[in-house]
Length: 500
Image (spheres, helix red, strand yellow):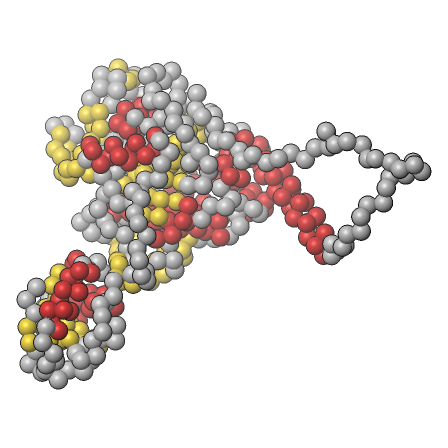
């Protein structure tokens, strides 16, 4: 049976066990010691807070109880045998399907949703809520992952199949939620406690009722397939545009891995929006969101009113820093399988480390010592992508090598062959760059406090640093976007706008 989420323990107020008051010779209770009176405003505040908390819990339960019958239920765990052992915490398999039956014609055209659905999972994530309800770990499973199904019956044809290879997202088309869960459990050995399925409609409704979700991007995002067109900067995305953002796969060569990174970024922003807006404490907002969302999702039969309410209460103190995100480490891209096509094969050792952390209710990220000194400056381009030639613009011996070594230690791809500049009387350090590489130039200049940016048409992709007499130091920089590689773990507060 699925493990229900545990509610936070709240001591119940009770009068049992309290001895009767002592009385004096006159039969009257003794006069209590004189104490300072609590200000009336404090009493009123405490009373009001108590009423709000009680009302919030009562209305929340009433809302969920009313909607419980409207949630489409699926018997996701029927007759399952030989399942992995249960661990601490709660594991929810969250899948996003390409269902679009309730999308209006206007929305289909505006957000490029006119194609025929494949009736498969567009997004697959394991969401682990820790036993103490203080951490959420989200592991994205690429839809094109190489997978092998257990024996099953095709839900469309009724034909019995032995286990066979396929792409992970195709398991849903053959055997629905049950086969998807069984396949995921076989691959990860992580026991799934609950199943939650979201389609295009419920996704857009969630975003709209929250008033939009803030997303920032260091570079323009344009995808002709979904119609996404975002200039660089910060944007508040409403439902339809948010759907374009998380579905886009044709922005760069990383395809699905890039898309999963944006999905994780969006989920972190969604958590930030829900917690910062007071959603989990405001009964009216709580009601609006639950009415918009729960009526258009599918969930397992065990994920009922009490479980949802207990989970919501437990997560009231959540923030983006309480969440962590990663993608299953990939060992081989483009793994060809006959009859299936090109798949992604997981790295066995690294992926096992991730799933072992879920089973043992441990954080996904390896513990690392806290870095000394000031935090790195956030920059739009990763230093390892920037080629740099260093020149000494002074008469100080060895200055060029000192700057070259410092930039290399920070991650920049220096030539490791510094040379003397033509002008040896440079006062202020100069970063010379071709205008086509202006974002790289800004990233390099951030590592050289007080430097001057100087555009030079036709210089090419290699940036030039002319160290001046005013050079003091190189500061550490860090890309604004987390690394693209699968297996990298990031916290929610590392990818939320304005908190990077």
